[in-house]
Amino acid sequence: MDLVNHLEGRLLFAVPKKGRLHSPTVSLLEGSDIQFRRETRLDIALVKNLPLALIFLPAADIPTFVGEGRVDLGITGGDQVAEHDAILAKSRSGGGDGGEGNEGVEQILDLGFGRCRLQVQVPERNGVSEVEGLVGRNVVTSFVGLTEQYFRRLEEKEEKEEKEAVVSGDTHTGSGKLRTRIKYVGGSVEAACALGVADGIVDLVGMACFLSRAESGETMKAAGLKAIDTVVNSTAVLIKSKRPSRPELVELIANRIKGVIIQYNVPRALLPKATVITPGKRAPTITALDDAEWVAVSSMVEKVRIADAMDQLTVVGATDILCLGIMNSRTGQGL
Image (cartoon, rainbow, N blue to C red):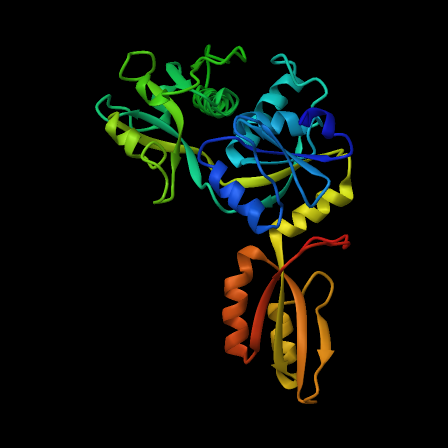
């Protein structure tokens, strides 16, 4: 099948094609009843039960495709969105090329998985313990936009303090040019210091115990590096174009991903306490039961809250608690 010619009329949804976010993203889509089959070595998959096509892209490229409106929706790391925004801000200020036609992205939801930190790291034995020790030196990273932004603020702060300390005479006022030399490396960033390319690096370190060795901080330690500051804390996020082709379908997908319907029975006398736990988008749906002392309640709840909500409802006195996936939505408000 020529998949490219079957994309017309479908909302395009970019998802990571590999890496630490790929498997949890696929599981999330399957749990949201987004039915698809990806053929071997193909980066496009048509969704069977919705007018939707999944486009498998490198996570780092997804904010650009979404920001330019080439795809409508995407899942990527918050670190990649922050890097995209930093580069876009630089291009708009006249400090670099690119960014034409890119309006940026809108974050819909923090998905909670893929936790990591973008950290400034230095060799254990080089004597640098504070980030100020890297100003004016060589720093290697895959996140040039965020790293330049970080060190520019650091240098501006340093220059401001120098000016305030000088009562009279000449002082270095700064030319606006970054003194710290930022170099881009696409992979194996942690090797840069050992090879003499860098005095420090800015790289991702995972925070979850189930991450691979390369993502969990063991690579940093094996390379003889230590973290001295954090540039960005990151998790996977759901983003959308500021001008999606089908806004109603974007809302439907977002609601499937972020919410479930919770249903339960509760004594009428305890209803006020129960509805505080499950207020819904506007208000919960309450249905009378044959037993006049009891009611049935149906309400939308964020997936990240569902376990706590069920525990709290049990404590309040609710029974027969069920969770149902959202197969459709026509509401206009957020959860």
